[in-house]
Image (tube, rainbow, N blue to C red; front, top):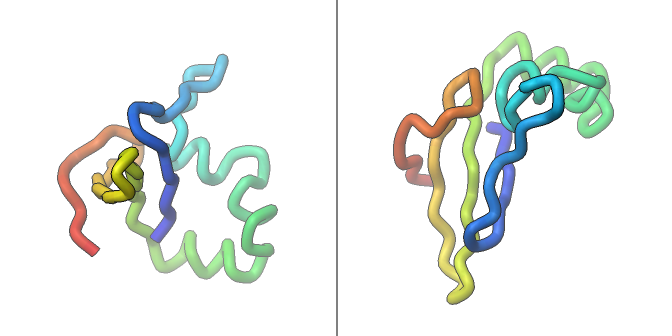
Length: 80
């Protein structure tokens, strides 16, 4: 699972090249995944597949989760 956390109304970003945060292109681009977890674990994650989730932390401390597709678009509620 790969999770991006956002506070309150903060949104997922889109890079100047049109790549959307949490899309496969963003996760795998610029060695982002490798830099976070190392080459061996990155290979395992990419080989086994992963679920993309955005966690929204609200001012009252509650957290909601949404699952994303490979393009970084919300496709539904995710329940841990």
